[in-house]
Image (cartoon, rainbow, N blue to C red):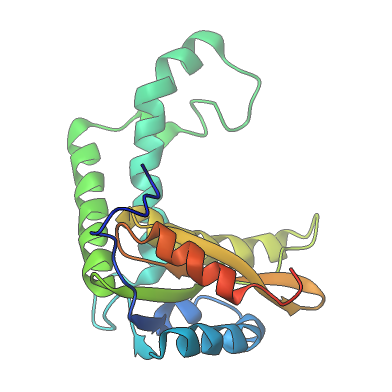
Length: 213
């Protein structure tokens, strides 16, 4: 079972990490709006430490996460669905050989290399979070982009995809809570926990929900 109250091995969260390099991926107005929520998480756990998910001296920073995740995903999509796409030519801009060219033209060696990068990121994030910690990160880089404004979408997409890749690449549970607002639009704080911390993250979410809800 995913949530089993009889599971004595369930972790106890005792540390709160605030990821500086994740905050740097978000707009300053989002970071400012999330500070009260971060402080509330810290108060609940009675802990707050600042960390970086990726060392400042690393060759690739957090801004490469989206690419390393995509590099595996695009190849896996083609392995699973490429034959069907070639046979049926679905009327889709996404499901086409042209859009999935990197996966379609990939060699086994390139797939191995992509998975090696993924595995390195998985190890990195899991090492950062340890066994009893939660990492606070912005859910997105900014409020939702305005419809039809390409510049807004471009500035929003890449940093947001990087933020969304942190828990996924490491295989870790994450809860996302709309605890702040910018220009009357919701912005989220995400809490990433260690393996097996699903129930603890949900308990935190209950304590963080606005009063009256």
